[in-house]
Length: 290
Figure (cartoon, rainbow, N blue to C red):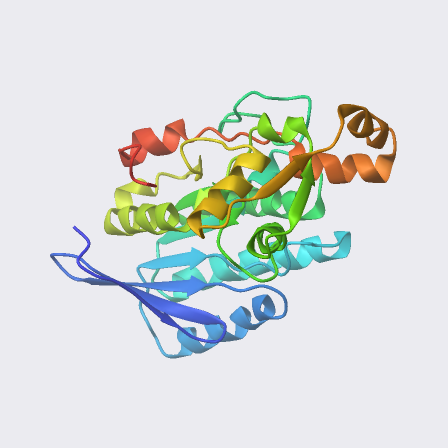
């Protein structure tokens, strides 16, 4: 049973302590993007020299979620450096945050749930980098005999000022009318609530048996459409989303223009992730995210 879930946030990394009934477990959490991702190599060298024992490493860090092709190798090398330092830190457990972008992108063509056994078809450089990191972790675990768990995450529902979701939510907050299409009532998108993320991490860190050397889709239990997501956010702040519908012929016309088609797919496409494996292995009640 987890008695305490304490995070001490530093500028580029933080230590996390999980107090179990038998002893205190310590985890090193690497987080942050941009230039912060590069600094972790130095942090790990310092910890190595201090002879600090770490039970878990949570590798959340990324160079940039909008990677260029040339940055893929930087993202992969960061994962390699983390793995290299595990032995020096006496660590045999790794939790890696990947992305559902290893499966591909939003689409109008597929409404089927995507499971962990689905083919990996990353299209963006970020997805390709995460897929390569996953492969390196799996191969290294066999050679170095450590345990790992890979969480594949959809967009997290947090009010971050730089997120695309935040830009949409700001329109709702200002009470501005939101142009949309009827397809926005029907598309199926998976997201991840912050509370569910924390609850799952608590379970994983209190039981090392959950690190069973496999990927798991970490998402909310049910998908939601774009328009309903905006309505739900509006209701949460007591400001109804003012959605008005544009005619379907305009949608069809926009779909014939490549750049506009990309925007429509990003806004109204489907990306439905199955979390059946998560529910089974973590024994989660479906009201956990509520």
